[in-house]
Amino acid sequence: MSAPAADFVATSVFMLLGTAVSCNARLARHAGAAVPASAVAAGWGAAFACGLFAAGRAGAHMNPAVTLGLWACDRMSGTDAVRHVAAQCAGTAVGMGVALVAFVPQWTRSAPEDRAEVLMERPAVRAPLSNLLASVVTTGALVFVMLRILAGEPLGPGGDSGADAGMPLATQPPYVLGHLAESAVIAGILLFACVVGAGAVGAPLNPARAVVGRVVHAVVPAGDRQPGTWADAWIAVAGPALGALLAAWAWRACVA
Image 1 (cartoon, one colour):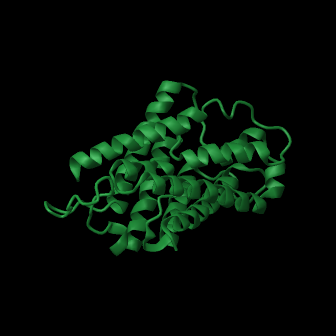
Image 2 (tube, one colour):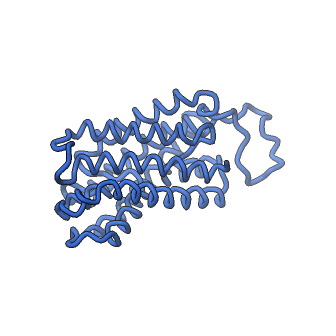
Image 3 (spheres, helix red, strand yellow):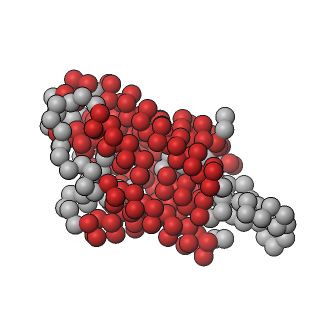
């Protein structure tokens, strides 16, 4: 299985399980009423771990911000990065769609704002600069740790002959390659911590979920829709992108 295909599978699993967690917490008339925020964060963390484990040693990214960080660290070409992002967007749509099918009765009986919360992060208080900063900081932490799992450390002096100018640098095997289960657990704990930290303010961490979730919200038949869902979409793209670039810079300074 190619790396983008593995990313598609992993993202589908991640979004299926994560969206189901949000459906169970937010939608009406279900057994999971009054689910605490910490349980939702734990569910998303477990979904992230399951997605990484499902991809095996291919090392799925499951987030365009992680892909951008790897590209910024010269761990993949621009063409491969685009393929990964496309796979993540497709996997996000598939995972969300399958999850929503299981919750059709609850979906149609829920308030518009609850349906929107299932599919995307939105700021609890609309303050664009503060929302952007929260997204940058939290996504930066997420990407930095994921780089430690997925990037692999550069080889020592002489490890790269320089013959392949412009290609990814030669590295030691990524941590996920030799420690799949441990990597999945670390990734799950990482996302749990990020969701707990950013969830209260609604900071977006995943551009694919933010954009695809808004598209799904716009096309899925559900009666009234929550207005203004696209107003903060730029933060959901710019924040993770800036966070990923800062994480890549920090990774180069501390590890590379």
